[in-house]
Amino acid sequence: MAGGLLQLSVYGSQDLFLTGTPQITFFKIVYRRYTNFAVESIPQDFLGESDFNFETSCVIEKIGDLMGKIYLEVELPEINLLKNRAYYIASIESALIEYTTIKQYYQMVYNYINIDSDVIRKLLLLCKTNNISMIDIEATMNSELFTGKLVDERIHLETYILESENFNNILALRDFKLDLIYQIKRIDIKILFNSIIANINKLGRGNSAETNDFLKRKDVIFIINNGLYAEIKDFYMSAYDLYIKYQRIYEALINKTYQERYKCAWVEQIGNALIDTLDIRIGSQLFDRHTGDWYITFMEIIMEQYQLYNYNKLIGNVPELYTFDDKIKPSYRLMIPLQFWFCRHNGLCLPLVALRYHDVMFTLRIKDLAKLFYIQDDSTLLDIQNIQSQYNIHLRDLRLWVDYVFLDSDERRRFAQSTHEYLIEIVQFEEHHGILGRQYNANLVFAHPTKFLIWYVQPNQYRHNPTGRNKCQWNNFGTRPDKTGYPLRSESIRLNTYNITDPTNDIKFFNFVQPYEYFKHSPTDGLNVYSFSTIPMEHQPSATCNFSRIDDLSINLIFTDEFLNLINNNVVNGVESGIFFVCYVLSYDIMRIMSGMAGLAFQTST
Image 1 (cartoon, rainbow, N blue to C red):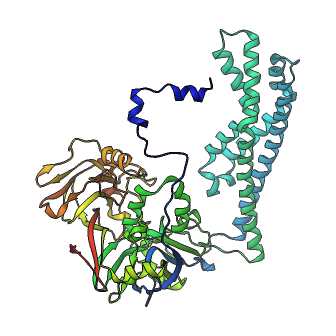
Image 2 (image 1 turned 180 degrees about the vertical axis):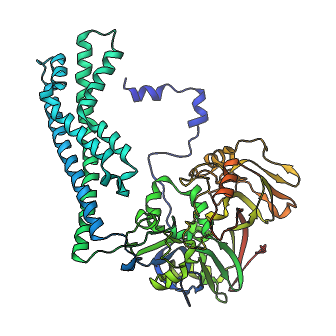
């Protein structure tokens, strides 16, 4: 009997709960016919000044029948902060000394790697030749004739790195001398070979001589074939790149084409960060308000891992923009996906065809340049406003790309003539500034059935840059530059005098447990979430808390010593020490459309 037939025959009473009176089959696809429609992305321009620290508006043309996904497009300018020649650090004399020093260093690296690679090739051949014993190979590797030149070149290179005065005067190398010595020893085949032999002799004392010889031969071949050549290449290329860099500097000075630039960079996630506020109004009523902070935090918990690469490209979170160096920052076109209710769910597309008497308007407030861009601390540089004017740093081509949906005539007529009632998702938030002390009780006022809360604290110096020399860290919710570390030791949520979370809970409950249970992505350290819904990312309600009926909502925060030390010790000129707190909530409201006009059933005070 065939296995499949046997599986069919072993049928019992338990199977009735699974296959009795079947309702579906997995072997015939059933589909539904859909109404005829088309989608086209059409640009919509903003009115008035569209630059840093300006507010501008865009009234949506009623070109299509429905409005779906929207992208905010803006072009960052190319930034080339050239120095005045009077302030150049380099001179022909100093460049010649540095170039000569680096050239000598590069030549030593080249000679050393050349000999090291030659010994590696010969050793690999010896290890693959079975009629040569490991004792003979060990004797060969430690003979003056075979590896003496390698040892001499290594000692020569190490001595130059550690003792050369000119080498010590080059900033690019001075602080990395010990790292260079470490890298040299990692790629030296004689050191590696003797280390392998010593380890196997020590660990394989109970093995036979033949077994140890086999292990030695195997390990030597494995290390050579798996990573050693790559390390040698990396070490060589770092020396070569340095040599080419200083050669070009010297030649440019000789040819009088040399230029020096000030170091600068955009902040990370510049596309989200540049949004101060973004409002949508229908008629004269404010329906929803988003901020750049909301986009940064929201995407932390909903973004799938496989989407991160493309998303970072869209919002300009790329090394060529946020790396703090003296390279030219290229012009870059940002495409920021908006996250209003109709942008995230096709079934909630805004029916423009039904809004005969109401316009849809977006109002965008853009942050000041100082909060998005920073420069090196140099006495020859003026303040950020003068730099913006001097180097012509202005935004260009600000517009919205709107996905218009075009319906067939019958469905268009139904949308235009019918009344509509949509369950929509809106954002509410509260910000608290200038917090001091070891703990803080954040009293919050929100309304409407709410799906989840998301909150964090930051030092004031993460959010302000009055001098232009401080980096605003909008996406850093931790206590360290690498976005790690916990600013909060404990926290708890209180509703109407009752703690709904245990005050003794570990901070990871909000930072990791809640995101793991309810969201698609684990946020970085310091970003805290609490969900009332079981599936908060689906539009279908799955439990809420009606904040309209809550008189007392608060989050009690106790700060860590590390965070308080950061507040008190990391002082930025022009920025008062203190803590910033913000809490966002995603809530439900009802949008009604009738007689060509739209309104909210339950108004939110903003």
